[in-house]
Amino acid sequence: MSIDINNESGRPFDEGTVLDIARYALARMRIHPLAELSVVAVDTDAMEQLHLQWMDLPGPTDVMSFPMDELRPPVRDEDEPPQGLLGDVVLCPDVAEKQGAEASTRHSMDEELQLLTVHGVLHLLGYDHEEPAERTEMFGLQSAIVDGWRAERGLDGPSPAPTLTS
Image (cartoon, rainbow, N blue to C red; front, side, top):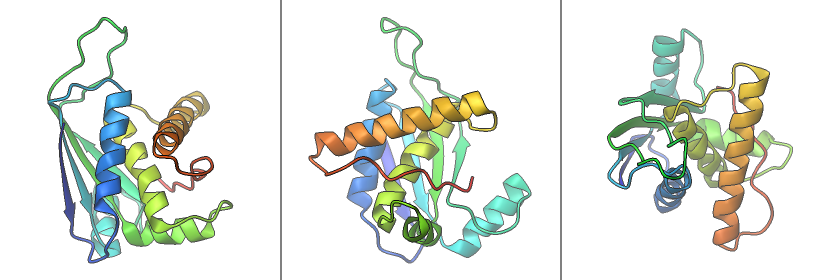
């Protein structure tokens, strides 16, 4: 998979871990190994501008996704995974840090960014959480991916509880 990470936020974070969990999520969802993804980290001002421009909502948010080729996971195991441009996941480390600190399962900015990366990837793949059934499916899948990734790397405990504002 071709995954580009661009940190425009001015905040250091574990880019290698974000890259690793994005790769894991795409592999788990059976996306073609030649699919392309871009992850961009921005500051709160840039995120607020994107949030207002694309969602018509004030204030910065934690993660936004901008799909390109509208790739979807294969329905059956024997189906060929789709190939193409997934799109962009935009993260805001400042919001992630705040959410992690305020979560019931207090966790680090990097742990929140891991969760948000998976959340953004799932949005690129067509998952949403507007309706209760969609929310149950998406957040269940998100937890399974993050928990699986953490378990494979020998990290203790379950993934952080979702604290998403988007």
